[in-house]
Length: 436
Image 1 (cartoon, rainbow, N blue to C red):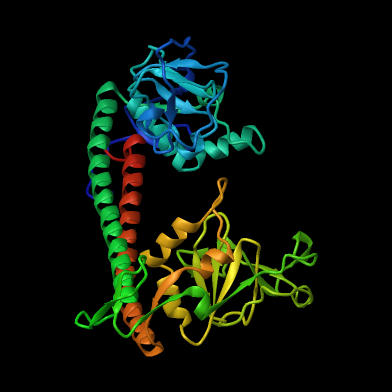
Image 2 (cartoon, helix red, strand yellow):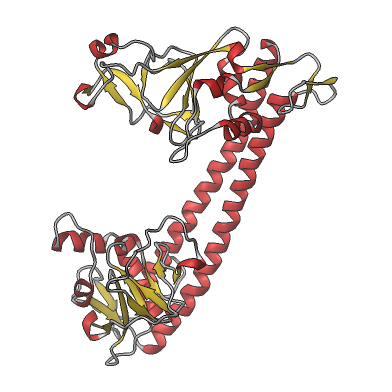
């Protein structure tokens, strides 16, 4: 915040979470600034939703899926454009804002309007309350009132001491923050788009290398497989079952249960241990060596690939055997053990290609959740070069993708800094630490 002007004089606010405020500002309990409206709903009213990013709008303006629709709208209330809306159960996560629409909501929302004793710019107080949310104050307050609850009800809000800048200052703060946050969000969106383009570049690099090779001038031939199309003349099109072994985990009576977990032992892997097609062992569960020895199939060895076959299917990672010599897979996973015709690393890249994903998407089944069977995996067609070409392709992709990943990491760092700056800007503006 260096370089931004400050007020000339400050005073103790008498409120612990604010500390000092500009000398001309006042403080008052929220109940003297706002009243809660409980309006009847109208036939034309549609559902209004308060989202965690502070937007309060008609649900249809954002998305329809992911919500539970009430069969009977008991206690629903009218919301009007300009209301300060607080989602009692989600306020701790930022679901506070000014509604941009007329509509209706569940009674878990508090629709607030100025009481009239003081000038109130609802947008200023929306910024202020979201700062209180992001700082953890609202969550700490709610838990202090109701154990194991994060509810932030109107009565909780009404008893809070809030700063009251002058009419001119409230309006200036809102105008300043609207402009600055729009600029910052625009810069963040550009960086997010850059990440999307970099991810697309990664996909193009992988798809080209594992289906066409590295030499653009190599003679091509028809693979004879519709999924694959043309391949380098010296490559072959093979079903996965020809070049790998499939291993399910032991699902018998000895399958590990809660009582079998230990602090240190043999890794018991689940789908949560595969993140972006890489094996993460920092949050792994363990079973004892004795339990492990009692199990049958499903034991890992270096060079195995692990694929998720239930829930979010198709996530795949290499078990390199470096950190742990072995491990065991849970019921959501399957082991793919490469033979001599294909290396683990090359197959891992193949499994991230469009050729692989399209076949998984076409053949996967299950209405409640997608599932993969060994039969589906066995019949996936792949373009396979000789092992020497595979090693060259893997070396090339490791080098090129590392450069792309570094660019993505740097861009994510830039987004993090912009988000931090935005948060600091809002914090300092709404609490009077800077003068706008």
